[in-house]
Length: 406
Image (cartoon, rainbow, N blue to C red; front, side, top):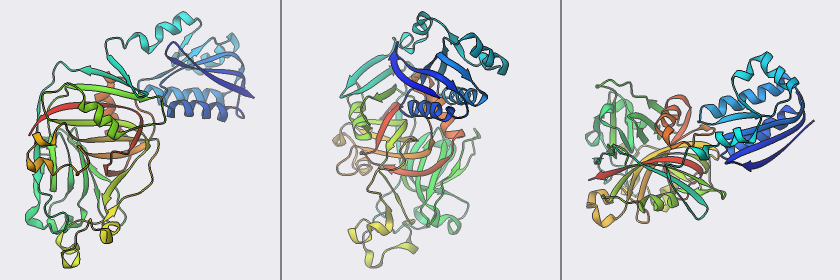
């Protein structure tokens, strides 16, 4: 049997294990580590001073934790291993994978607190924010695509389709799809997300599955077909991170904090990567095109038709999944054009689409924001794309802010 306890010290989480780590106790140790990682921990000190035996099953637990944390900028540090246990690690070659330390001075020097001093930091209502202002920031341009006027009555036709090359879309959202001929793709329009020119869309059909076109770097690229939406470009003015000591922080609260940042523009582009604690989102069940048009010109958002047209769960979903989103936040709607104001609902100053990827941890290192975004977008599986609502909940995440002109 093995017993596990945890403490916080030097900005690190310590997992103190005692007893025997074998095939019977390894699952319990694995569960403890998994809970710590899901709880947002990225740097673990595993104290093995009181461990008297480790089998291959136990080694596998530590190896799995090492792989999981390494890809998100974390690590497992092994502390005070007895000579006989260290021999087991050496025979397997695992001693070369981990930093092995024997004094608290070594642990203190390894603490992430020692390398984050140059970042500005603040705490608000139990949420810790870190922020870096970028030296190569570049104001971007918001581009409106198509029109939302025909959405309410599902009255779009082939003449309403706007075609844009994937290479021209750094970031964006909308109702979109891909295909060569309208007759082929007309029923496949759905919520779309564009990040780093990678294009994801969720067809509004009976049994949807996310389709996507990763950007190859070719100037021609895929032709994306929009009914409506928007895109933006530019370089980040800010890159930040947040982590809550409470159960969660909402997307709405994140938006309010972003709006409070010093900025010279009324519009801000937001790129987000976070760990979900329950999402509230919505997506179309069928494409808003003429063949699907409600009889007598009824509005698809009318209460009688809403459930037929919209997937809108009333309970939070997709807890512990990785979420990647892009959208815009308006600091002052009155400063935006009438056309741009249509992006936002009456009671919100944010419009964001998000891809829901598989479960797992993400890095918390601001300097790894771009690489972590690329890892998730290109290596992890995605289950859906939704318009994300302000009640959506996150435990921690990173974000980039681009100042925009309309």
